[in-house]
Length: 244
Ligand code: ATP
Image (cartoon, rainbow, N blue to C red; front, side):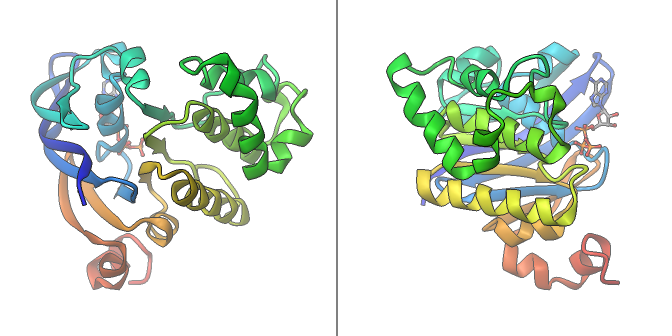
C-alpha cells in the first residue's frame, strides 16, 4: 500500500533557538489510521503543525528533512494551499468559533468546496453526529466540551479531506465520550476512505482504532509498529498504558 504522507528526518526549531523535532520520520499508509503517541512536550503537535503549514504562525521553522504528501514536497507551502491539497487539521482544544452557530461553524470547514456540495456534506456530518443536528442553530460556545469536539471534527469532515490530522481529540473528555468520538473517527475513516494521523496522549484509546503507531520522546520516534504489537509490548504497557 502506498504512503499518502512521508515525513523524513524532520527538524523543527522555534524562535530560531529551540530545537523541538530532532530528525523525526514517519509515514501514513493511504486509507489507514496512524497514531502518533507520546508524553507532554514530546513534539506531537509540532509535527502536525509542520505538516499543515501552521508552524510559521508560531515562529517555528523546518530546518531540515522533508514532508512529502501525495509524492509532492509540501514544506514551505502556506496553510490555505495545503488545505486545498486535501490536508485538514483539527487543532488541539477544539478551536471552534464560539460566536457562530454550529451550522455556521460547519460551513466554515467547507470553504474550499463548491457551494452545490455543502448541503450534502452537512447531512453527512449530521448522520455521524445527530447531536449536532439537534443543536445546529445554537451558538457553538454554549455547547459542552464533547459537543464542541464533535463540531470541530464535523467541520473537518465538511472539508472532505484526503488526510485528516487530529490533535488530541480525547483531551478533557469523559471516557464514554472518548469512545463515542473514536468510534466515529473509525467509521469516518472506513466509509470515506480518509487517511488519519491521530495525535494522542491517550494511548489506549488511540491504539484501539489505529492500524499502526509511532511513539515519540523528546522530538524523535523511539518505537513504532502495528497497534496490536504495541498493545502487547511490555514497555508500552508499562509506560504508556499504565499496566506496570
Ligand atoms: P502536548 O501534548 O503537551 O501538546 P506535544 O507532544 O504535542 O505535547 P508540542 O506541543 O509539539 O508537544 O511541544 C514540543 C515542545 O515545543 C515543547 O517543549 C514546547 O514547549 C515547545 N513549543 C511548542 N510550541 C512552541 C512555540 N510556539 N514556541 C516555542 N516553543 C514551543
